[in-house]
Amino acid sequence: MHNLSLSVMFPAYNEEANIKLAVLKAIEILETITDKFEILIVDDGSLDKTGQIIDALAREDNRIVVIHHAKNRGYGDALWTGINAAKNDWFFYTDADLQFDLNDIQKLIRFIPEYKAVIGYRSPRRDSFMRLLNAKGWNRLVRLLFGLKVRDIDCAFKIFERVMLTGLPLKTRGATMSAEVLIRLQRMGIAWKEVPVSHFPRLFGSPTGAKPAVIVRAFRELFNLYCIGLK
Ligand SMILES: Nc1nc2c(ncn2[C@@H]2O[C@H](COP(=O)(O)OP(=O)(O)O)[C@@H](O)[C@H]2O)c(=O)[nH]1
Ligand SMILES: [Mg+2]
Image 1 (cartoon, rainbow, N blue to C red):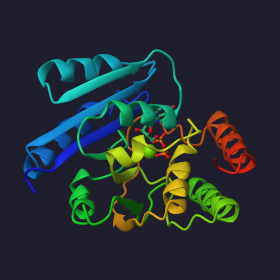
Image 2 (image 1 turned 30 degrees about the horizontal axis):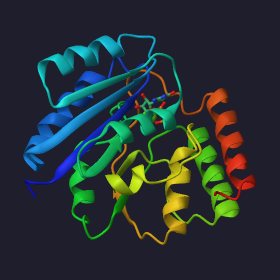
Image 3 (image 1 turned 180 degrees about the horizontal axis):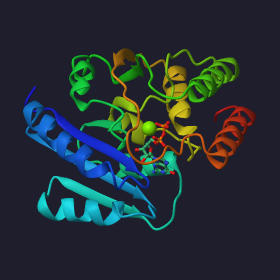
């Protein structure tokens, strides 16, 4: 599928130890897949050298687009910035921390355009026991409140038809956005395909997904969503 029109996005927050390799690997793999791709990196107010590193990468390669948030605004907000800046037909996003193998994108692409969304699930997920426990609780809660049936809500390895995403009236801007996207698609009757993807322990930098502030915001946004009945 060498004419696949693809936008690949990395949200990045303090990933100076990972981002360059993540992007260079992505380019190497994407070049074998399609002639029409762009890479968007949204630097969400990083305090380390992430911003400088990605600016330098973008200067060398015009397929790389960099967006900086002046301050840290959160995972979902960075994702939303990326979704709206993307120009190609299919929007794929993943993490900038090298916990995924971008080669697995092939496993997702196989199911488009038949499916408008193809989403990975980490099999097995290589995170700490506590993270796995938290994730299990979170998945159960979202299923209970919204009836969302999906194996791994927060797996950052998903591809969507871009215009379908830009059309969603998303209310959340924190980590809950991953859940909100899927809840809305499920309610719209959009079928997706779930595909197992490899996952690796984080070797450099530190995870922020389990920071208390991130968790508190996620619960607040989830309950707000529940209260408004997701309109
Ligand atoms: N935009 C944005 N990205 C973030 C933030 N925190 C983490 N990230 C990025 O999101 C991805 C996953 O973060 P990580 O902390 O590894 O979460 P985990 O894999 O769930 O433990 C990485 O690419 C991070 O750079 C944030 O506050 N804003
Ligand atoms: Mg991670």
